[in-house]
Length: 102
Image (cartoon, rainbow, N blue to C red):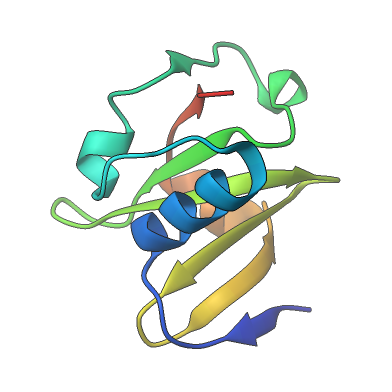
């Protein structure tokens, strides 16, 4: 089951969440956000709440969400809005990398 609220894209949501929750300012775009922090190596068991999870949706489009625990992450799209999703086979196929900023 997914919960949705419309109106923001993925990287803008990460900027807002990190500023509000951690008082950390992130760069504006997904491609600049993927350059900060430290890459989390290994498998999903190494992920912590607050880690940024990056996806390659296709050769051009990149996507970012924030891990919230229990195999779930928060992300957003301009048309889909803010969504809590399960990290499942759909997302695993598109997984790019995880980065720890906090």
